[in-house]
Structure formats: structure tokens, C-alpha cells
Image (cartoon, rainbow, N blue to C red):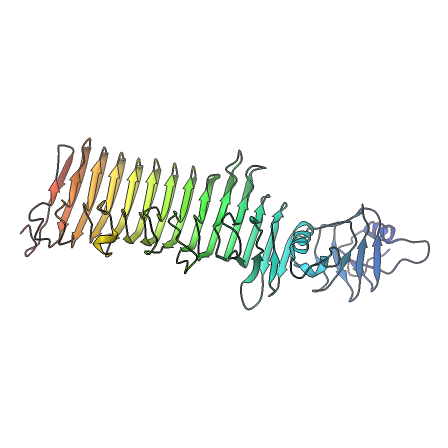
Length: 482
């Protein structure tokens, strides 16, 4: 065959011919870049592998028989319609074009009430899928090879979890991207997970989620806590709403994890009290967080509804992050190092704004804690607890409306606070602003400014021992320590 414009045209087999033979003959043509199939139905009864682009005429389609495979390593241009049928395997690896669920519609016995088999077949067969503006009701599906799923239309395309769904989407491969989707989990039980990373099976790299709205999940994103890890994962514009439990529970996310415009909205509106931490990240290195926000529910019972807990994490960059309305503490850092925080705030909570325990070699710049809640709702733990830390610098720290101590320092070494503003400690509280809890060494607070107006506290700005030094304390005229 001589290709025309680097294209070979294939027509329906004549008597004594079969489609696989015609395809294989065409692929031997020198210089071929594309196969174009004429209208009609082509039966594939053995494995066929095509390593060029394919274009289908208006009604061209394939029946892939049981035991046979249709493998395409190239773009497929066919439009949004039914293309494949039969019980055989389909593997299409496109570089630029996109496929549709419709392509494999006739390969499964579709149930409009439960589209699990259809979505799973599409996930298994294609590597680039456009989901159109439909409501796909599914149970548990898995992604086992590199795949990009993108919703298109006037809204984020919903994948609606059926009642029995436990792991709506299991990520069991590297190179997965999910984009412009709603994962609706409101009908699932108290163990429903939206995105589950199968780290009990293999290492996973290069994951991306962009423009995801996860609604009503017990847990939005977690892993198997297995023997393998997740590396190079990015979450961009991901919202978790009407939550019922810990939304990010990451044990195996080992390194290079990025969160941009990620929010946990925990106002569950009648779902029931959460009283669980919004996000827990453990054993991770090189984390970036920008605009990572948690909005809790002040009406929750209990005191365990924390914002973000990070344990044994290293080299973390955090910018413009906010924890607010929490029935617990804002940020809890345990045994971490290499943190750089800037413009990070906690607003309205029951326990403590920042609990920093065992942090080393870090810098926190422009951090603010404000707690305007009523006294009956809050504990007396204060705004900042810093203990067992070393080589940590705080620049521009603000404590506003503290219940209890504004800053408690215990067991620290080489910790410097450059600029600490204390404003409006509660009138009913008599606690000191800064308390040396003991076992501190070379801890210095420079440019301390006390703007509080508590008549009960009088001049009790500091309760210090030998390990903490206050340099240049400033008490403006009109304050209690005038």
C-alpha cells in the first residue's frame, strides 16, 4: 500500500479476508502515520497492536472478541459515540486526543442506576477520558495504569457514590490526574473514602488533583498505611465540604507533596458532630502549602476537632494558611524540622492556637492567633505552646484575646522571638502573658509589646526563670503595666 498524506485507508474485509490481517498489512507500509477506517463493523478475533494514529469514519466500530485485544498506541479520532463491543480487552494510549466513556458503552451490560462497570471499563481501556456533564452513580472503582480523567461542561462533573461505596476511587498506579470533578459521598457509611491510595500494593508517583469538590465524605483522601509510598503529589483547588471525619489522613505520602487552594469546610449542617481533626500528615518531606484553610464547626461537642496535625514532617513551606472555628487546636506540629511559615493564622478555637512540640531548624514569620469565643466554650490552654524546640526563630508574633497564657515556653533551646505583640487578654483572666515553664536555654524575646488591658493582671506580663530573657519590653502609656 502507498500511503496518501502518510495515511492508509482501510475498508471492510472482503470474503476470505479479516480485519486483523488488513490492519497488520497496512502497518507494514513505509512512512505510515495514520490509519483511517471506512464505515462498518470490524471484528477483532486476535490481538492487534497499532502504533500510529487512527481515524474512524462516521459509523466505523470494532467488535473485540473474547480472548482478543485491541491495542492502540496513538491518538484515536472518533467523536462521542459507541465504538467498541465484545468481551475482549481494549488498551488505548493517546498522547493528545481524548476518549469518552461512550466508546466502551457496548462492552458492558450497563445499568443506569449503577454505572460502576461502565466507568471501570473506561478506566481500564483508556488513558485520557473526558467525562461530560452527566450524573455517574458508581461504587468502588480502581485506576491501575496512568490515566487522566477530566470533567467538561457547565459544572464539575459528578461521580456519585452509591450507598455501599467504601473506596470510591482507588489510586493503584503512578501518573494519575483527576480534574474538574465532584465526588459526592453523602450516601456512604461511616467508612466511605473518596480517594484511596493503594500503598499496600506499590509505590505511587506523579499524582495530580485539580478542581475537585468532595462532598460529605467520612474521609476524603487517605492511604493504606502500607509498605510503599506516595511521592510527587499535587492537590490544586480541592474543596472538602460537609465533612464527617478526618479528611486528609496521610501516612505514606513521603515527599514532594503540594497543596494549593485546599480547604476543609466542616460545617456539616445536621450530619452530626465531627469532633475529629481535619487533616493529619505524618512522615513526609518537602511539603508546600499555600492557602490551606480549615473552617470548623464551633458547635461541635468535644475538644478533638483540631485543624492540622503534622508529625515527623520535614522541610515544610506554608504560606497564607488559616485555621478557624475549631473545637480543638489550630496547628499541632510534633517532632518536625525545616519549617518556614509566613502569614499563618488561627482564629476562634477551644484549645490552643499553636501547639509546637519538638520543632527544630525552622522560621515562623507573621503568625497570628485570635480567640474571640466565649469563655465558657474555651479551655485555658492559651494561644501558643512551644516546647522541646531548638534553633527556631519567630518573627512578628501576634497574640490576641488569649484565654490563659499567650505564650508558654518549656524545654526549648536557642529559640528567638523577634517581635511579640500581646493584645487584649481577657478581663476575667489573671494569667501571665509569657510563662517560662522551665528547662529553657538561650530563649530570647525581643521587642515585646503588651497592649492588654486586664485590670486583674496588673503587671504580670512575665513569669520567667533563668532560661528566658525578655529584651526591650514595651508597655505603651495607658496599659496596665504603665
